[in-house]
Image (cartoon, rainbow, N blue to C red; front, side, top):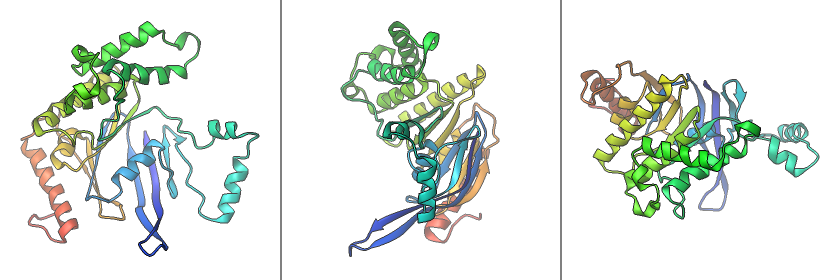
Length: 303
């Protein structure tokens, strides 16, 4: 379970006059996401959705508040005062920089992340991209848990098959279409069998039909994991209201900057779903009304 409590994020920025000023990205964001659910984060551009996702991943520390995954702290808030800085340094006073690097503020959670720009290695084949991810995970294993090279190749092939890329295993990313590259990113993330996948606009760079196919691929793979008793939690940042509603168990709507949770909308429709389902369309219209009001301070819909 993911538990975010009172997350705040403040950035110091230099303005055009060369003076320091502050930018508040997130204000008092609290959210609980149960295991095995798909939750979408949606809101106007610049409202802090991606910043919140990176805080969940441990890629950024919150200015205040905490993220716990399965009861374990992800990263501590950064010290804001001199007193807090002294206490922070005292707490993490180790005998060597190496010890600091190993123990202090290190993400300790079973998370994979998929970005909008695929983030696959262009100099590696599709198969090598997946094997590389497996090797990183394998490096942390010991003894009998450690997989052999043949096992890594077999597992990479298995996950390429799951996303219909087995016939392209020896192709480089430049030889794949945008949709194929995103399926490769999905295969690489799933191959390490994480408990949580965080996705930042993963389907934004492909055409509408490919996007729908990728959505269905994600749901199929998510459902496979849940069926075998290894629930997969997915947190997705998107600007597409239809995508958020079609995929999710819950849609979290963020307010304009500084970002705060404006509304949480459950999507109770049974799966498999039809994109034209009247219940889903009604939810989409409600969310569109909220976004239109927040952007224009007026709406043609009733909220």
